[in-house]
Image 1 (cartoon, rainbow, N blue to C red):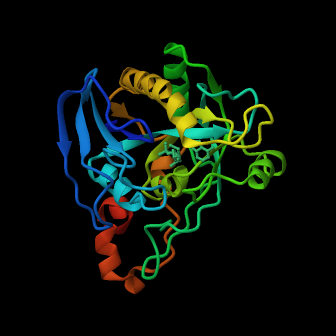
Image 2: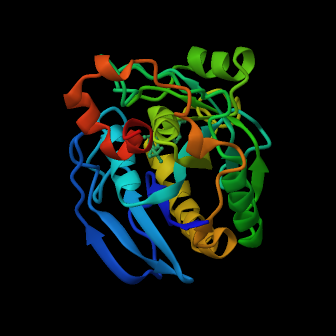
Length: 292
Ligand SMILES: CSC[C@H]1O[C@H](OP(=O)(O)O)[C@H](O)[C@@H]1O
Ligand SMILES: Nc1ncnc2[nH]cnc12
């Protein structure tokens, strides 16, 4: 067993969390650049926590310009092993109504203007993302949501779009009817892929704000409608997060689903062919594998 920090990445509407003891905004620099913001560290119910506002305080970064690699590297560097993302999302399902939460377990990645890997020329790695979220963390998020009285759905497919514009009506219908997506957002990819490369357990809580554009009774989505729902969702999201330390505790056995061993057979580049500069940048993310 090793002790750990629990990381929370807060999406639109969640720029801090309450109740941390010894709270401190810590600046972390990484070989992949500067994270979205300083990271709020502290202790809740005896468990160390690290909170990162994905868009930065004041909502500075667009979904495309969020420094996803720096964010994940920084959380790994701070010794976090669990990453819980809390995000605003549109819904493609009548029964997943605004105000409900969905514990996402699959993704369709339609983003195209982002760096998606820590690896590349000089150190090539291929990790599996067939099961991109950690069921252990999903269990804790589901329990926390139910305990908080949130209407929560376990399991769902998140369509990650590039944005920043919302979908056209044709796209919205296609994602829902042909592709089988349940929710839509702009940020969980490549975040989930990068968490897997960094051998971090990752869970995503989708806080539904709207029915995107497909719903005949709700018309098209716009940001003022989203913000109205977002405020109530953000309160519920912070309540959910505050319940996680008690449920997850501070000690971690190896992940029963193998998230923390994702790189074990993934690196193809032979040691003598590896680029020393890239190897240096991978010190936090893949140090475990590369020091051998
Ligand atoms: C506020 S509407 C669109 C915006 O909100 C979501 O952000 P996040 O995933 O960080 O909560 C969505 O992905 C868009 O970036
Ligand atoms: N309908 C939607 N599409 C993409 N991102 C969103 N975030 C919140 N609602 C959204």
